[in-house]
Length: 182
Image (cartoon, rainbow, N blue to C red; front, side):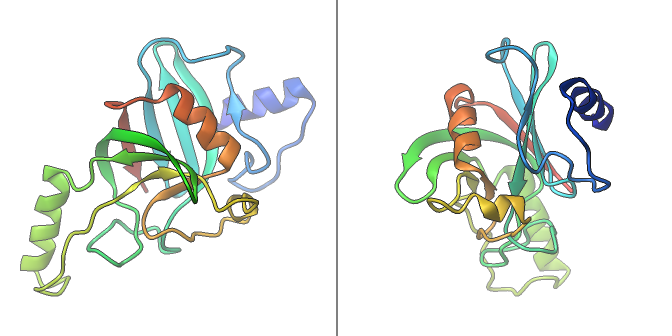
């Protein structure tokens, strides 16, 4: 994936930083106007990237931020961690605070099993709850800079720049697979 960014950057006459996060200032897309066929989304927490794939392969990469700076897997409600695993977009709506909201089906059966194992091992309090309400959304109005600065600010959601989430909202529908990994 990094080679594609390098080639696109060289082709477009831009420059790369020495950082892993060379896409900070903009989203990267293939030269087609919209994805072809069904899409899937892969979110890489360690690279702060949301990648979109369509029938032809890679389509776009957007910078994102998360909940907790640790980037750990969500363990329980209130830990501000972003969950890891395979999910689906369930609903989407225009959001009064964060531009657009694409809800994912957290907790899944797999998430509940991980939660229960952690409870049994004593990693989380016996009275802890798993939580929910996780999704992909924008930032507060005029605060896209939090994405540029890697400021993890959500309660466990994935946050994108408002123009980017509006674009994603336009072509990602209910049922889209979302894989989140560290």
